[in-house]
Length: 227
Image 1 (cartoon, rainbow, N blue to C red):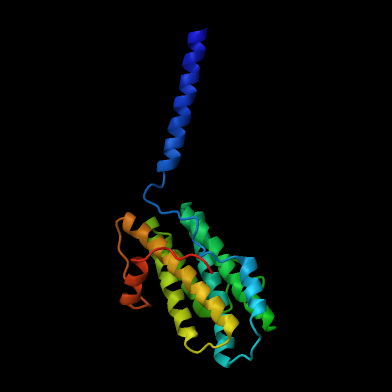
Image 2: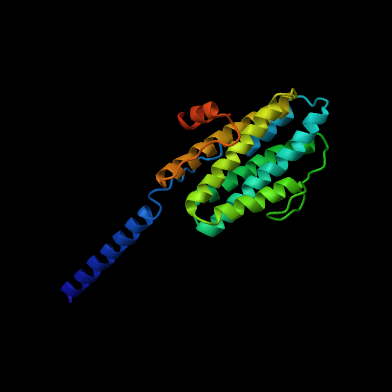
């Protein structure tokens, strides 16, 4: 009886080890960096936005706030959809980060008493028809394979950086610049994570929006931290 119990115990231990090993190796080629938010803290961002002065808005600033609010939603929606498709944690982690990005822009919209273009729109619903078309295209591409899904992630962050950099040229309001620079840092971190997954999966990525020089600088540097 003692031998039987001993053998049963060993069997349970071996089973547990096998399950644990399988869990650890399931996504061995996937970089699942839990710190994909660029260290954007919701409370710190809100506090900083409230601390900085409320200044008059230019037409360009008005347009960029509305657009970037939906563009961050595009990123979150695509990553949520691709996580549901593939179950790879990087999409879940970064979709949560994009939710924080969306909230940061919403804080600015509320501060300046501007209408929120997102409202109660569901996943995949956008006021901007170009973003709606882009969402459909990216989801379609990402649904074909995990490698293509990683490339879709890189494409989104590539585009986000391009649009944020373009907006920063004509934005002088301190609070808006603060938020946009935080968003850019987050996007650089996301791009690094997606690129590592692309390489680990045997693929490559060439930037479509930012310059090749900027892209190389990003992927060859460490994750950024701090506000």
